[in-house]
Length: 129
Image (cartoon, rainbow, N blue to C red; front, side, top):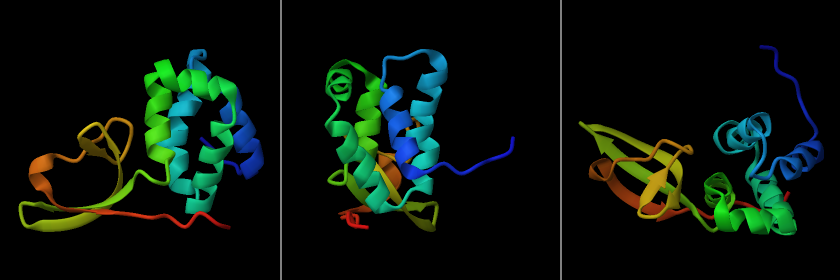
């Protein structure tokens, strides 16, 4: 599939239109925000879209009941960012992660196994453009 660019503000407006609960196509876009588009944004853009959606009453309502909104919230929250250092059979790595419950996640569905975590440090993203 061909890719194309979208203006950040158009992306933010689209995100507002897709706040769960929504039909499947909109839900898939919402999930892509967390798993795919998060990686394509800068830290200031992530913070901006997170702050933007905080002002939307549908987001506030959705956050109370919708798991996908809660995951998005945890992923984009600038105060919930961590660097997780791991050692998997002698191979050291570090990953940017977010915390949900007692686990550190790198995507909506991929967490880092506790037994491989060596160190976790709080990561403070740059929030200004």
